Every structure is written in C-alpha cells, then in structure tokens.
Length: 245
Length: 369
Ligand SMILES: Cc1ncc(C[n+]2csc(CCOP(=O)(O)OP(=O)(O)O)c2C)c(N)n1
Ligand code: SF4
Image (cartoon, rainbow over all chains, first blue to last red; front, side, top):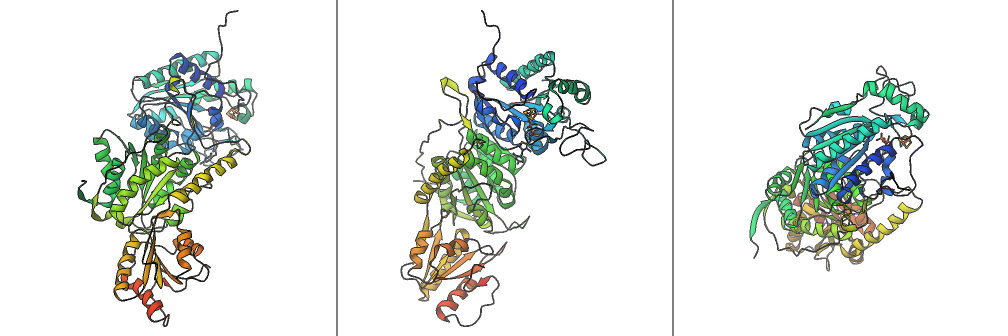
C-alpha cells in the first residue's frame, strides 16, 4: 500500500512529555514538517523554552539550544549573530515570552533579529502546574487566580503579544493562529511558512502566535478545551496577520 | 617587535579581547566600565564583528550563551550591579559547558553603591555568585600589562575547559592609563565539534543544555565537572611571591591593592624590615598550598583588601593555625593608603605589638568569628 502520510522524520520515536489533548504536539508537528519540506532542518538551530516543551531536545532530531527561562530571544540573538548562515527557530510559551522574558522578546523584535519565534499561548503556566500567565483571560481560574483572574484583585489584563509587538520597527511578520480545528492547523502552517520565508529572505523578526489547548490545567476535557479556544480565547485574541513585510 | 601604547584600562581589556579573536561582544552601560563597551562599539563593528548594546545585563549574558553555543568567542563586561544580574547566566554557562569571558570592573556596593574602586565582589567571584555547585577561573590583574595578557589568556582557558572565565578588575584598573605592549598571540585551536550550527553534512544533532530530569544525571555531570575543576586547580593557578624566603611579615593582596602593597614592601625593605608579599593572580584557584608552605616559616600575615574582609577567609583557611593574620580593609570607595599599611608593619615588627592602632579598617590579629 502506498504511504500517503507519515510523521516528520525530525520527530524521533522517543517518549513524549505531553498530556493528552495538549497543543504543543500539533505545533511541533507543523514546525517539523515545514523544516523538512523547506529543506531547512540541516542548518536549523531550535531554541527551546523553559516550559512544557523543555524536553523538545530529547525527541527532535535538530540542533537544540536550551537557554534560561525567558532568555530565548537573547540567546537566539547570540546564535544568529555568531552564525548568520543558520536557520533559527525560537519556541516559547506565554510565561516564558510574555512574563519573565518580556524585555528580551521586545528588544530582539525591535532590533529586527532575523529569526522566527513560535509563541505558544495556552493562557497558563503549564509546566509548573497551571498558574496564572500574562495571557490568562479575565475570570479564568488558575492555581494562582483561584477565584478567576480579576482586575479588582490587581491581576492585570491579559497581554495581547501580537498587538504589543506590532508597532516595533524591526518586526517583519506577525500573525496569530490557532490549532483547535484542522482548518486552523492548516492556516497556522501557512503563517509559519510565511514567517520562515521571511527569515530566509533576511527581512527581520517574525513571530507566529498559536492559541493552544492545555486541557489539564484548564480542567477541561480535550474536546471542551478546543471549544474553549473558539468561544473564549479567540474573541479576546483575534486570529489573523498583524504585520506583513 | 610589538609597540608600547598608552591606553586606559578598560580599553586595554577591549583591545586584548579583540586580538584574542573575540567575535561577539555584548554589553550594557555601567560606570566604571563604560569605556570598554564604547571601545567595542567602535572597534568590533569596524572589524565586521558583532557588537550589541543589549537591553540589560541579563540579555547580554544570554546573548553570550547563544553566541558561544554557536562556536563564537564571546564576551560581556559590566560592573558589580550588572554582574549580579549576570549570575543566572554564568551558572547556565557552566551547566551547559560553554566557554565565555566575563569582565567585572568592580565598584562599591552593596546596592547601587558608588562608582568608585572596590574589591567587594571577591566572594561573588570565587565562591559561585550564581546557583548550583560550580567553579570558574578568576583572573585578578594588578596592572594594565597584566590585564592585557590575562584577558588574552582568559579566552584560551575558557575554551580549554568549556567553562566561563572571569576577569576581575576594579575602578582604578579600568580608569587608569598605562603603557602596554600587546604581545603576539599564539592562536590555539580547540575542538568545536559540539557547537550548534545545524546538523549539516550528516553529523548527528548537537545539544547545548544544562537540564536533565533523569535520576542521577545531574549528579554524574557534577562529578565530571569536578574533574575539570581539579584540572583547573592543578594547571591554572597563578600567584606571585616577593621576598617570602626571609620575611617576618607577609602581606597578602590581589589586584590594585597588591600594587599599593608592593610599594609598601619596597619601603619596608629599604628600612631593613623583612616584609614579603603573596599576590594571588588567580583568586580562583587560590594558592592555598603555597600559602600554607610559607606559613610554616613565617608567623605574621597582613591581608589588605578593598572590602570588609573577604579573601582573608581563604588566607585563614590556607595558613597554619599558629599564624597570626592582621587585616586592613577599605570597603566601598576608599583606597588603602601606604601609611596605614605601614603603621601595621611598624606595630607588629618594630613596636612588637605595643600600643593600640585606632586607624579605621585595621584589625590586629583578625579572627574568624
Ligand atoms: C528563573 C526561573 N523561574 C521560574 C522557573 C520555573 N518555571 C519553569 S516553566 C515555567 C512556566 C512555563 O510556562 P509557559 O512559558 O507558559 O510554558 P508552558 O509550560 O505553558 O508551555 C516556570 C515559571 C524557572 N525554570 N526559572
Ligand atoms: S500541562 Fe498543558 S501545556 Fe503542559 S503538556 Fe500538559 S496539556 Fe500540554
């Protein structure tokens, strides 16, 4: 029988750290497929985050750099400046990118560093057990917002990263996507492909945000988590392109 | 022959790094090391190498992390408060076995302190300022020629062990001008097959990482790292001794302070007082054994530092219990004066410890309490 679909060869047959229904796997899959399809795997340096995908190095057949929590954009700057001939993909969660690493992402974007950031927005700190993230929605219950994120309790507003970065001169491409339906997975892949092409053309900083389910910490069934993205996240985090070259 | 040039300390370190093959420099403004960052902005960019004024010292050290991962000779420089911010990054550099050079032009602390001369970052430098169980070679030059030579050497040491190396200066060293000679450098080559750049030409994927959640792995790594630390102790230790053979009192000092103490030793010798000097050039590794040997022949020691007494703890550890250790310290901005140091020598060797010394910062028979 003719094989018409298989998983990317960059994804090794190793134990996976993710919970059932987690979005990280889908996002990895898109990244791996694109790197393979675009012939980029052999000069790719994958910059891992500190978060649930921290163990990416153990199952991705790519050169991997594992920097400190939130510092991925600074470390990626170092890699890309030292080796401009490499293709650099940063992978960051919302705690990593929009809390502890806010300064690093803003300034890397503003300098127009020529790498691509895949920003996985699951509205919680997954790895540490479901605490409030900068992207946690108002009213959303987490370990550290047990009554729901509340403005009156001084917890602040959910940060819209694409909108925040939009005004920066060094940014070449910004898009927000989701992986909660097959159609959206295809769109996410298209956006990432565009971002990768922009890096290949040396046009500057590119970022693709992905709304991604974390059923375990949302305390929802996988199916319910997909509906949560559609009904709760997308109204606050509209999908689409925010900046194109 | 290499020519003598008159330069400022911060610029000497910058030029030495460039000559050592530095390709990526990342800085952030802070006095008293600003001339170093400015020098790099001018000369690294002119040579087509990487210079970035980062958004913070945290970003700068993490840029170093990335650049070193990709095989570059990478450096960052700062002064005390900025070096505190780099500690997380230094710990990661050790954990991921990345070579890098960090320069600290120390200023007064704690807190924002001042922009004046100090040696108050000794503990932070040699006892592991960041988290985890690690060591790194720390060079403490005491004049600009040494600053140039040790900066060049720092890059090779970092590459040889795949470990960060610290160059520990101070505001005087950074700010003063002196003639230096940039000697010809014998460029060594190091194995860089572990670096990141894509798994081209069929090589297996490389990983730069300091994490493992598997049982026993980190413990094993630390035992392996220990072998490197032991090798550094054996092979990288540097110190200078002056008139230690017949001395009745030996001064122990490093960096700029040692330079002042050398003048005191000369004055004492001119007066027939048998004073010697031990100057650690690496403050890690520390010359414990050499001091212990010297302490078997000499009973009186004087430690001079620009802090409340930090290296003195290592001196106490090194010396036989019977040795008496005196201390003179200037924490946070003051420079030890020859006359204050000489007063202690006079008290111990001439007046035979009679009469009290009331000079602030002087402690006769200092004890760990
Ligand atoms: C300096 C530092 N602070 C805190 C942590 C603990 N920590 C590990 S992962 C993480 C949050 C990760 O959340 P996110 O970036 O949203 O990624 P996710 O796990 O949801 O994919 C935190 C706080 C750390 N490793 N280092
Ligand atoms: S905690 Fe959430 S983000 Fe982490 S693996 Fe589980 S589902 Fe995925």
